[in-house]
Length: 411
Image 1 (cartoon, rainbow, N blue to C red):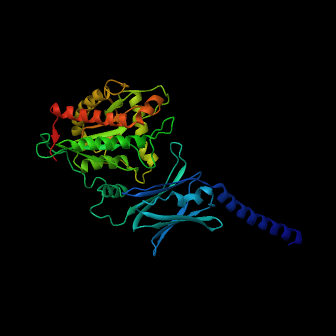
Image 2 (cartoon, rainbow, N blue to C red):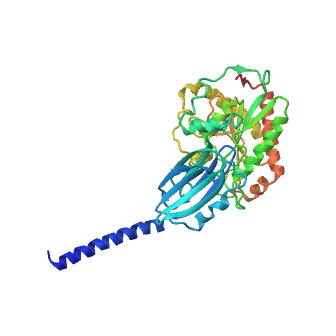
Image 3 (cartoon, rainbow, N blue to C red):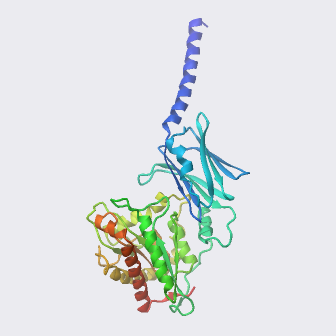
């Protein structure tokens, strides 16, 4: 073998090694964390790392003190990551501190120091609704106490794909309203946590407004002699749509009210609306569009399980047809009262395939309180006065529905 040939092969080998090194370094340099978000709640805390490319990671735990460690491959620290410690709130029930370091030339290590033992659930999400790739870390208590929110048990069932296990096999028999128990109303403030919902020109977030309205409504209902209210969420936390439905059935709710403040492509759109479920197609183009956007909540908020066996269970079909009929009557009463405080976008109850309205045996409606994308209505939505008016309108609709002889389920 000639010296020239040998030298050429050595140079080629060295070039290949250099190219490999540059490629790996270049890959790490090309991957960026564009946002870090931490959502604490009493139910669970979520950490989200948003990146311009999918992230590959490894995880393990350490003790004394308790820590969750996540190593992310092919990544370099940037200013966004350096600020992760500032995202941790003092009142976070699960996370004490967060820190990040360049573990080696191409690995970033994220360390979450914990306040209690947790059962972490880590998964990745593909881009959706303008949000890039995400690495999601959900921290659940490893041994929840019986006093904690029953929502934890439902979320655990959901994460294991077993949400149907504790749900009734069939609808309960009918009974008389308020005879032997209070009327139970499940209030569902839409969106939450990683899913902000719609937003207005002045950065008003739907999830914040509807939570305030929901709290007003709960306070009003709980003052009624024969009524009791529960909420699917009472914090800024993401709850999957199916879990919201399951919680309503777990609490043996008689009515379900989902509260929203939607946006449209035109700022001229205005007015309040009320929607019920349809299992045979939307009753209008607007209703179909709205259902599609609301049903995207799970994709935006981020869920680690798929499938819809519970909501599509055919044994509930006959019961659900009657439930939809009752929902339309209930919705009509609420829509009438909403017309006293705001312009109505449509004077009849609209219908579409809203996933959150699919409890087969609970009359359920979705109230669009106003268009947050309309500047005038955004200003109105921000005021405690209008928020309280909406709550009162819904309560009056609830009372009118039962005053007209609505039948409760005996649960």
